[in-house]
Image 1 (spheres, one colour):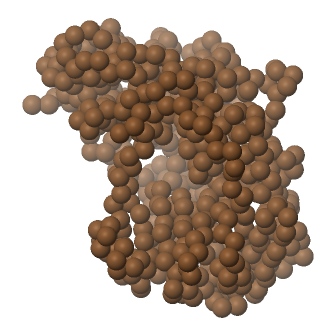
Image 2 (tube, rainbow, N blue to C red; image 1 turned 60 degrees about the vertical axis):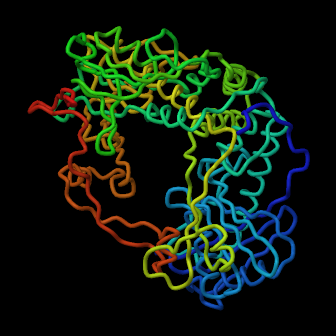
Image 3 (cartoon, rainbow, N blue to C red; image 1 turned 180 degrees about the vertical axis):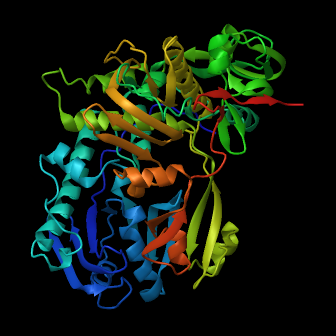
Length: 586
């Protein structure tokens, strides 16, 4: 396997096109389709019709588009969750000679490739590249956003629908153009399929000056056992506490993962003796019986159980980075039965990359540019996760040839399919898959967060979420990389139900409501939040995903959801406070 190192930038970027669809609010019917290539704009209109209807706007667009011999990549914003699915629906019903390959990411389409009559058409999602809504992007990059004052229930009757669609298409094209120009000209990088791919390409074309060797399969397996996510915990529900006299404050760590990426990282492997001194990863047993008061309230080490990430007390076994193990020992943990180790020489190999991009976010600089700042932030946040890419992935093939099915060992997709759909298991052998870097970055981030939590003592800490802390303590704020900044200082009431689900009341009476997975339902409705908190089932709607489209369901699908039971990562007491869970492994 090749080392990860510097590379030359491609000098001839391909052209691209964009398209957009306008639909009914139930997302089942379409009435407008628009297309733009930087020079020419076209649109197609119909009555409100399903996408596979021969007279629909999608059908008109697709009939024209797939008859063209020119095959540039085509983008739609949030296309993997929306527009591409309308095209897919039409393809399934109207172009039987086409074969389709989808690269899924979670439940979305990262890339959809259509092959017909010897030609290949690539459908991409620009939101995976520029991670923000189109209105926000257009305002930041172009100075003006989408057409305002639109009633989407009656857009199909609004004479402004034509200018609305054209403005969206032109704005998306120009945002992509500005994005590309900024990455290539200002940052010296190269644009990829996603923000993460762009970050990696930019890193290695403009900022990396050495090679980093990959791990062996056995070493990678061990390191992935030490690759844990961010820390998100409720420490106190806070429901009955009045914070008027001593306000609750929210602090965020400035670009925490970028800060971690700038630190010395494990780049040169040199030995495996777990009982020697050094920095790296160790498999061992930990015992917290002698932990100090800080670690007894907020334990140091992560632990996986039943799909959840816990921070327990007790005696248990696992694999961790030495930076977390050093902190644990400092706070009274005992380490025994060290059976495996991977040790590295550390080097701040990405310090120049991080510092250069972070400086572009300085609003006090007379040359500050909002577009460049936004893109720099995006790349900094997207970089580290690419190193932890899962090597195993799955491709979806629709109507593949029998020879291809046999050649690649595909298996039929389960479910009531209306046409041949197969799954292919593929393995990523990319040289940027370096999970020891990703594991080290997330460990640094967790340690950084925990150090700030400990700094809140003797004041109470109520909640933390990856890079933020809610506390009555008054911490020193700063603008530097990795420093804390005060996000809210006037919270007078709060209720932290479970990780990612909480409500804040500010001194001016306004509310901030967060409910991951229930955002449409919970936003701004206190009564709904109460129902959600009680665990009552909620009626939610979501647009079809690629697998549901393949099984015949299309449109805005209704379903019931509720907060899962046993979501607590700690044991809660009657007064709303909590203590860590205790785990004793045999």
